[in-house]
Image (tube, rainbow, N blue to C red; front, side):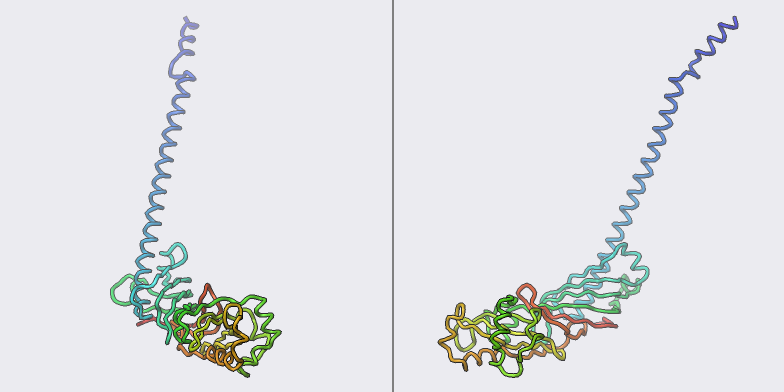
Length: 296
């Protein structure tokens, strides 16, 4: 009798290995489901926060673009990008370390050009940025570059078909060897600085008053906030084929016609021009300014 009961006890379904394994598997599945739901919830919350962050950044960029449009006297809003993530952390501090502004058709004195600028530590309080009215924007430092397109520069020089290109090392070597700068006098005195590749440019087009194609090597510099273009060497015709047909006095006239000083005023944001170079077929004039207030 005892052995029978003991046998029944050992074979009880409640204590069988199969039932215990099934119970543990069900518990594990429920735990995995709970973890999966938590992960999904976190992903959704994270997605909503990121969407809110980008949405707030878009609103802020639009507000800043409207303010910059008035300041730069543009016909449309410039492109404004507030760099850095998360945006909301910057908004709470009211300090945006890097704001990029890009605009075309900006009036720069007598020229019309394109603008690319980085505004360092742009400061706008949250209520002013997202509230009504025009926010006052304070900027610790602005670093900008304007691109003077060949068309605008050619209009000033009387060469509508003007092309702007960098100068090759061979052209620079020839210029140093020939000492051609003496053709235009002391304003273009030869020096190692004045033939620095970074400050040299090749201007090509139809010579005003002559109707022949010319290529002029010129130095471009910024002095006292003005753009100085100094003709250094001229080739007349394709590959200089007409050089021998035109007297030296005519070539000097061409060089002097392309030796000009342009006073366009100050760069956007009140920056003073400090450097100029050739960039993609245009003249790129750079400058910087500190402690700016954009209030219209």
